[in-house]
Length: 148
Image (cartoon, rainbow, N blue to C red; front, side, top):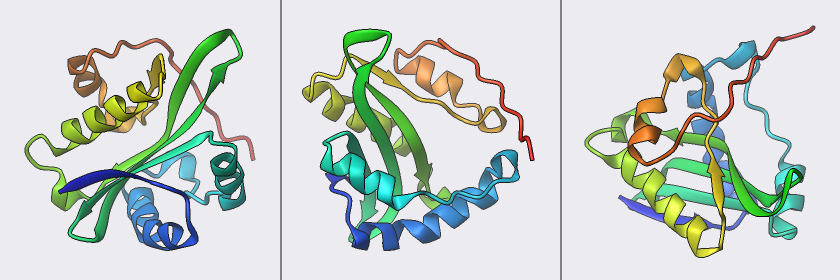
């Protein structure tokens, strides 16, 4: 398996769509489907505020992590990365693949002087122990409610 950073592109979007559908089946958060506004991703990419990391077997996309990068409004000197979405196909989630993928992305972000990395995740698929193993700590709890 190969991990790498990739730039936003229409070809990558085409590759990601089937995985997004699979992600929806696995984590139907608030009953709302993943329906990214690709124009926002494109704009963020142009502004150098988007990082996409992929996991591939040969040339086949089997996973991704997407991060938003920027200076935090409450900590203006702190360049921070917030993971927007993380997914690995179930067939490749064996051994330490997920752990290695997260570590790879962390190291790449550290090379860019990112000081804090945030990983929100669905509580139905609690990854807390995995992140704690990597030195993360729980810093926020978010409550969500679908309003219409």
